[in-house]
Amino acid sequence: MSDAVTLTLATQPTHTLVADCIAADRFAGLGATAIAALPVVHGGRPATLGEFFRVQGERASVVRIEGDCTRIDGIGTGMAEGELTIDGSVGRDLGLAMSGGRIDVRGNAGANAGGAPVGAARGMTGGEIVVRGSVGDEAGARMRRGLLVVTGDAGRGMGKGMIAGTVVLFGNAGPGTGRFLKRGSIVSLGEVERPATFRYACTYRPPHVALLLRYLGSRCRLDIAAAQVTGRYERYSGDLAELGKGELLRWVGA
Image (cartoon, rainbow, N blue to C red; front, side):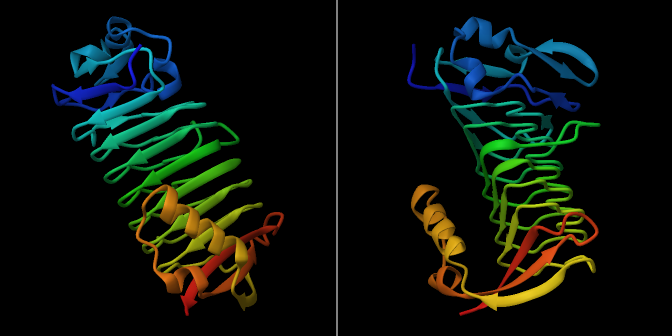
């Protein structure tokens, strides 16, 4: 048993590599040879994880991935516990249908981070995803619970169809953020184009946001400005085309 499992990208995929076998809890009971033998799909053809990654360590629920994984999709799919750190950017479907644990990306992530599988009614149901960069379209789509934090910008439809949970965006949000939101909170520290079906409620200093930002500063070592912690936020209720019990909080200054 090791303290951690390290996957080092040794062979860059020439096509999209679907590696939904990579999840911290999945590695907890596997030796290095078994991890390397896990199935992946490269350009639509079956392959093994060991054809692309060098595996060090075994039987640990702390996993570190080293290398540019921009062409690798599905990392952290269905993860229920453990810690997964990625030193580089990743492809789409990061933390797909994740239910627990923590994923920390030191780069950008593609579309549908923390989202739902095709045709599924819900996406992420628990755990934390921190992306220290930007994300593609529909990050956090149909979230049921959990926390998604993005320090950069987001594409279209962030938090689309959220059922519950919390999204924190430090950069700018693309069009359609929060569309079809049922419940849950989207906290925007940058510019956001809110849907017309959201209604202004008030401007105040939400204590739960202050607690959340302090947590992110201490737990995740994010650069949080004091004015963001103690500042004023515009609160918009929505989506009124749905249940209307969600909220979009936009930071407006000290």
